[in-house]
Image (cartoon, rainbow, N blue to C red):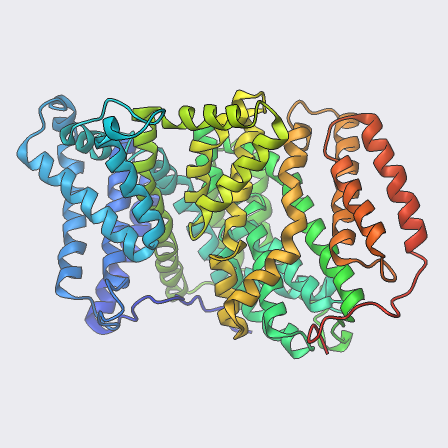
Length: 637
C-alpha cells in the first residue's frame, strides 16, 4: 500500500512554481531551525520565541489571503512585504536583544519601530489565521491597559502609557514572546513535527484499520470505529480539527455508506475527534501551556490527563452504543473489515515510536528530548518495511507539514500574549475571580457553573489553547480562592476550552466534519453537542474528586471515585438516550440523571445510595426489549 499523503486543508493558498518552491524552502528551513534550536543550539529562550513567531508568521502571510477577494494562487505585494518584514523583525531582535536589555528604560527609535511593527503584524496575522473574535478580544485588552482609569469599578486601574505597553508586549517575556509562545516554539512545535512524521509513515492508517478491526462489526460499528480511531489518533495529534481530517476522511464515508445520515456521521466524528486533545501523551498546546503556568513537569500533566480521557471516551462510546440500540444502527460485515493480525503484521511496528515516546517521558526525559529521539526513531523503524519507509521526498513533506501545522498555534499563542501581559499588569484575573466568588457566595457548585459558562462563552470560535489561556486567566483564580486543587482548577479550564470546539453556535470542529460529511454545519454541531453533553459532567467529577487526576493518590480512594465516575457517566448516557435493552420511561430517566449527580460529591454514603439505586434500575430495565422505542425520523435506515 502507498504511504499516506499529507495534504494542507482549508482556505490556504495553493502555491506552485517558484513561489511554491520558496514557500517550501521557508517551511522546511523553519522546521530544521526549530530542531536545531530545541536540541543542539543553546538559544536564549526569548530569542527563540521571536524567531519562532517571525518564521511562522512569514509563512502565514504567504499562505493566508488577506480577504476573500485576494488572489488564491499567489501572495500580493503587501503579503510579500509583511512576510519579509517578519523575517527582518526576527533577525533584528536576535541581533539586538542584548542592547535592548541594557537600554530597556530608554529604547531607541529602531526598537520602537520593531515593537510597533511586531504588534501590528501579530494583529493582522491573527485576523487572517485565527479570525476576528480572538483578535478583537485581544485588542480590547490593549485598550484596557491604556484606558484603565476610565473603566468602572472594580475594573479601573491607573493605566499605562504607550511606551510602557510597547516595551512590555514586545521586549519582555511577559508579552508576545512570553510563556505561551515559549511553549509553542519548543514543546508544541516538536510534537507537531513528531506527529507529521508519524502520519507520513502511515501510522494514521494503522490506527484507523485497528479501530475498524476492533469495533467495526459491533452494533453501531462505524460510529464506534470513529470513536476508537479518534482516541488513538489523538495520542499523536493534539488537534481536534486535524483529527477530524485524518480519521474523518475514512470513518465518515463508511458511516454514510452503512446507512448513517450525513449529519449524524459528521457529529460523531466531531465529538470523538475533540476528545483527542484530552488524550495523552500529546495533548495539544494547552496542556504544555498548563505545565508552564503551573510550573510542573509535563509528565505530571500527562499522568493527570489519562483518567479524564478514559472517562470521556467511555461516555461517548456508551452514548453511541445505547443510540445504536435505540436507532437500530448496524455494524459492518466482518468480511469487509481488516484482520487484526494482518494490521499488526503490516504496520504494527509504527506504534513503537509512540510507545517509546511514552516510555522515555515516564523515565524522566524532557519532552523536547523525547520528541527528538522519537522523530529519529520513526525514520529508523519505518525503514524496516517498504510500505512505511520514508523517502527524502516524504521527509521534506513531513518537515513542511510540521511547519504548516504549527502556524495557527504560534499565532494564537502570540496574540494571547496581549491578554496574558495585560492581566499581569493590571491584576484583572484576581478581580474577576473575587467577583465570581462573591456572586456565588462561596458555593463551589455555583462557582463551577459560572466558570463553565464563562469558558463556553469565551471559547466560542476560539482554538482550545486560546480558550484555555483566557478561561484560566479569568475563571481559575475563582476556583483556587475557594479551595479547589490548583491542578483541578486548570484542568477544568482546559476541559471546557477543549469542548468549545463543538459547542454551538460556533463549533469549528463540527464545521470541519460537516464539510467532509457534506451536511448542514449547524445540524452537525447540534447533534454532536447532544451526543457529547454527558461528558460535561467529567470536570465536576475531578474537581470534587482530585484523585481522578492522580492528586493525593491512594488505590482505595481512586478506585472508589473511579467506580462512581463510571456509574454516574453511564447513568447520564441512559438518561439522555432513554434506552437500555428497551425504552426507559421518563421517570426512570430522571432517576438515572439523579444518580449521576449523586456520584459527584466525595461522600461515601451519598455515592453508595447512588450505586444501589443504579443497580436496582439497571436490573429492572436491562430485561426489556427495544420494541416500541422511539426512532427519530431519518436517524438511520
